Image (cartoon, rainbow, N blue to C red; front, side, top):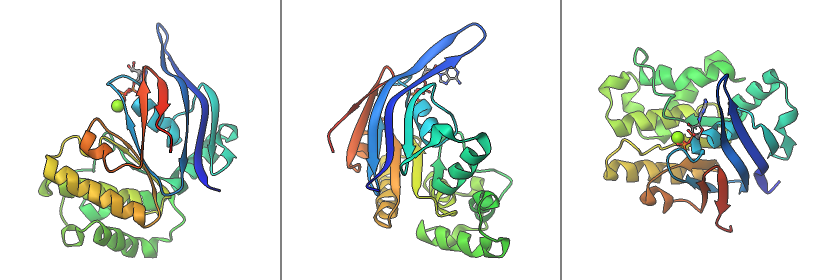
Length: 226
Ligand code: ADP
Ligand code: MG
């Protein structure tokens, strides 16, 4: 299976009691295994909505989403949650580290929903903290980490359950440019170890690390050819 993700005619309307917002109007693109894709577009164009649909956090109103050839719109909630935990690692703005937990404990969180037995959790956490270069900071709390180190911990957490696809929403948004570059180098390294990575960004420097950019404007996708 060459294409890990295929989206066709994806639409998303948010329905409220007194409003409806058409956040995605026509999204078509696919992602190959081990590709690093950037999603770019103005504020409000639908990038986060798209990332939530990709990560099986939200469902589209219309359209087809094939994940490793499997039509995910047919899944029941419980199956979707299971597939989400097995497939995706999230580096999302809203999913910040938990302040009362050490870096190690934050990193271990996704393992609760995985098939990894509890006795392997510490070892899994050690491995990924090592991979992101902060194994010496495992006992620290988020407040005791720099911005770059926090983002490294968030990436470790996204990797810990051996997810195939990493989804990142503005992962360098709050970092200075040097630290942002270090984080992008880390993403590139993670990709070269076999992961597929999808990154929402405003930043042209981040885009330069990507194999391909999907542009979103007003809920419609425009893909540069692979
Ligand atoms: P972006 O991440 O590109 O800034 P979003 O996906 O967050 O864009 O939002 C796209 C559109 O959908 C915006 O008009 C936004 O106000 C609207 N929107 C996003 N989430 C919700 C929601 N939960 N309920 C209603 N409208 C929403
Ligand atoms: Mg957003």
